Image 1: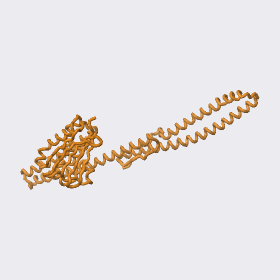
Image 2: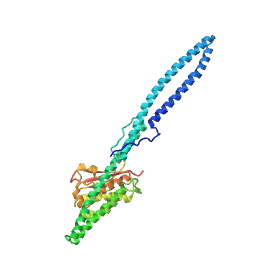
Image 3: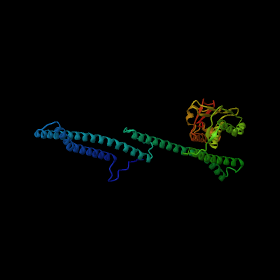
Image 4: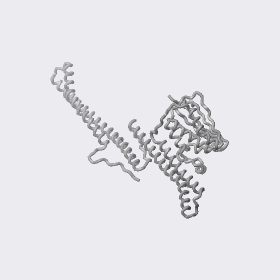
Length: 374
């Protein structure tokens, strides 16, 4: 795909030509002004000073004034000529540099419009304003490149997620049409399970889209961090008991309140607990804790004694559709979106989230840092 900079419309000059013309006009006006001052005001002042010295010989006065005029004309003319030449040279260099810089921005913008998200603008070094323009443009180009990469990966991941349930539904429907498969309770259960899987995927996609939307609205109210953990533990208590997993809460003492949206932050902790339950075997434990960081933030921690996370996967666990163990996640119904929702909602609360693990089989820990109520 190619792109070109739109040509300058007929009858319109470029910025470089206008800058050169402006420099020329300014130097021309300065030269005329200097010439007028030197030609009219200078001789009058010189005559007054000469008469004031007491020179009485008219011939000497005329000769001195003529010498002054000649010297003034030569020096002013030579000075103006050199100044004009140097100013024009500087103007040409500056106009060309400004023109090249703006042309580079226009070219890069055209490439971006054509889908070339690797287009960048070199730093022009023409001043803070031009450097800031180049920096901002390159930052925008990087964001667009990242967005395009995420869009492509999202489409590929959605297609990958849909392939298995759609293929299963198609195979069973073909079997029913051909009489190979009977519409019995096991068959109905499989069809219902795959339909539920598609519904769950659609709901998760809608949830992560809402969570990652710019300017997501959160109705924050002052909340005790310990209350958040106790509420999340109570909500998952029945499922944890059925799975044979112990859930405990370690309360923090003397913690400041935090401003959070109860519903959305309940979703954050619920997703983390769901993920921890999914990867913690019977007999294991999940611990929720609240504490104060050295920087003054309120830290909420969800840790488990489950399967753990290999070090190479830790930077990616909050990405959409990312799975550490693909096969197991597909069988237990995880869509790979829950942690992406966690990150989006935590960032909407001006917080930060990070995952830690000592390795496979040694559990995992997720830490959420929230600013205290000011």
